[in-house]
Image 1 (cartoon, rainbow, N blue to C red):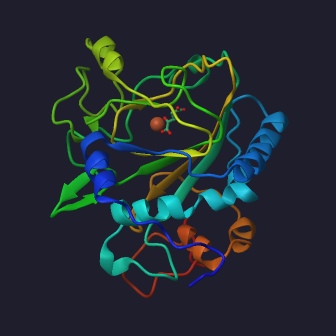
Image 2: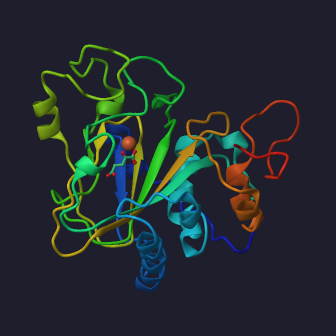
Length: 284
Ligand SMILES: O=C(O)CCC(=O)C(=O)O
Ligand SMILES: [Fe+2]
């Protein structure tokens, strides 16, 4: 057991029920004041060096922000929804991390700054089978591509947090657009109704939101006048699937504790023992 990382907190039956029902859960107030202060300093440090929509992945893979990658509050949930019991181990993670970025949005930030303009979207439409989709079978959740959002500032509902169309990860019918393969609701004649029905959350600084990327979700204008949004977005997948290119230097991963490194090992199962990360066994 890697003593530098605390034991994971198991996902509760209540969390499973609501994650399956809605496609997302909120873990409020996970981080201490001290942790929040240190992490915000790192996240805003990146911000001053770049622009208001900073996406330098290296910064959130390093420093104190790195500890969010396998924070005990989320490891239990990710082990439950991204792996199967026979693959769990104290030495290695049974899921992978494939993307991380920091978002800083000052009061007045507009979703038009995003490439998608805040359009509700998914990784792939869940209405037909695909490799990234949400599944529940045999009393077990498997959540394909999963995102964890760490909110380092207070979020007030309706003022700019990520919004979700709860339950849409299990949708059987199209969004009303012309193309069943389109991973967003563009050109849907009921776009307005979909947006009306989306919901978000209020949470104190230091909370985590976990959602399946099969769930319709959207970025929103940050209208909260009291503080910016400062969030770290980390994305996870099965040991056997990959969506993002990781594009992270070996030196950064090599400097992590061994168990954390295993989040970045190669994406394969048969042909040897695939547990540890190494320069020869890394996801690209
Ligand atoms: O910026 C946001 O609030 C939404 C981000 C998003 O679309 C995602 O994490 O997949
Ligand atoms: Fe998204």
